[in-house]
Image (cartoon, rainbow, N blue to C red):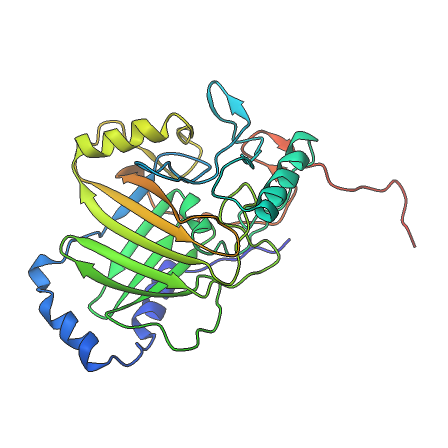
Length: 308
């Protein structure tokens, strides 16, 4: 069994030590216009309330959702992506449909999260825990499950030729109270998908994230909209959990996804984070057959006698 462990403080040291790419005069000038006092503070631990899919858009085309329902919302233990969503081209719809057929047969299928694999963007947004480490020249984003880490260069441009990497090349800047992150060059591994339903992506994938703080009322509007398709994480399932008493500022993420090789149109999603109860601890992804979330073991090939 392979278990990957990282020390949190080592992550901080690595983030601080990583060199920033050189910035051009125009980029540096733009950074200078952003007053330090006006930069929003996204520090601390944030918790995503819902699972497993991306949140719906406020309007217009939205992400693939789960056709399998339990008590009116997505059945986390049976992932059957809606291959009829018009954002999918014919080839992508067929891929999503085949993944769903595997779920309906009881066999399931591999995803980055259940295979302890880097999730990429936007797949990583399923993660229930998030921390941002904000520095003038870079932002480090830590995700609780399996110690996934992203690094965003601030006030910089993508290189002329991007070398694909697991989380892509991410550059960011502030627009008033909003952090905008632009990502291209997400590497395609053996489990290349933008969500848990197996929705594929191509080399043309382009993701824009917009983070801002919203008040409790605005957050509730988005949460109630998402609650119609995604259930809330169960209390006690993770080290951090939803805090029903928290009425302060929430972190809201709006993502816009475009990929001419897979999608017929750009689409968007809104994900809302609150402050959790509990502590940020290690959540180690271990390769094994135990499905802790439903108290059973995965169906894997077995043999009564050696084949040698």
